[in-house]
Image (tube, rainbow, N blue to C red; front, side, top):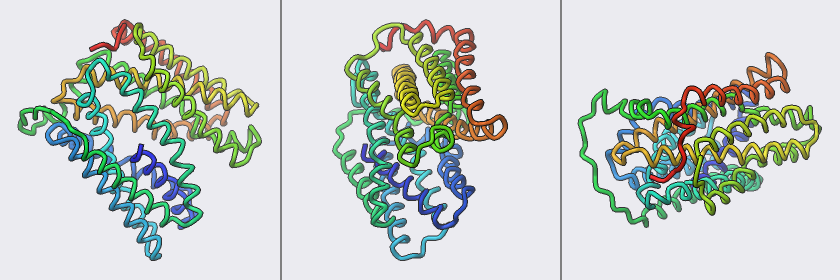
Length: 383
């Protein structure tokens, strides 16, 4: 929660400050690209590092780098020397640290709880992440009133606190034998996912669902031009999916899924597509909020099932490489989903773009049921 709140606060401050420095929407796109590129470029290296070294040490190192970056942003903002170029460079450094940190933190979970408790543990992790996603932007916006240096200083302290908390984790893990680095070991994560039809189906299903159903990228247009609300309305619309996801993740933590999880995953993604269509045609602010809450709740069901399948069925000595590939797929779908929504809206209009995304998501579900029957037949998340 500390790292996610810090990252969300920093994203608000960097976005606002970057736009204040340049007045350019294109520059905001460059900020997003600077965060995405390290994840894509370092993916194969990340998997090797996570599988070869103490995962607590890797995560703590990343958090210390992020704290140092936040301190540099605070100093540059307070002293007035922070430029558009230096801001992008620091954001790229944070992106590189996040590229290592996210798979490492995910790979730690199976080492901390028994295998039978992985699904509820992932649900609790999802609830913590959604809580942080709701709180982080709000805190960042409030603190920005006192200046960007205040936000960055708070962010740095949160990253330092997270590093100290990780230092207190006691972990018994037998170090795996370090095989020589080769092309085979570099691509082992990809090869493993391809050899597991159920895992490949779950990851690719989520990728295409998020890629096609990226309605949240068009929320500013809906808030101003279709629903007729101001910035307050946009804020509520942006928070609605996280509220739905938080509520559902708490339910799943208390009541883990027992049977027919494959069918439930397909059903959840279908509901995700239907909620996207409902949001697309709605002209009522209340109905739009409800559709987004349902969308977030359905999404977190597929997230918990997918992550549980990956963690339970992956050998520990390969978990870093597999998780790194998994993270890249999910990160890519989020980024490209926003891009796809923007391009489709520019070509066909905002409402048709959202409707096409929702219908496309449901079509993907129907196709994936035929392509990956192994996923549909999975009954339980028990190891």
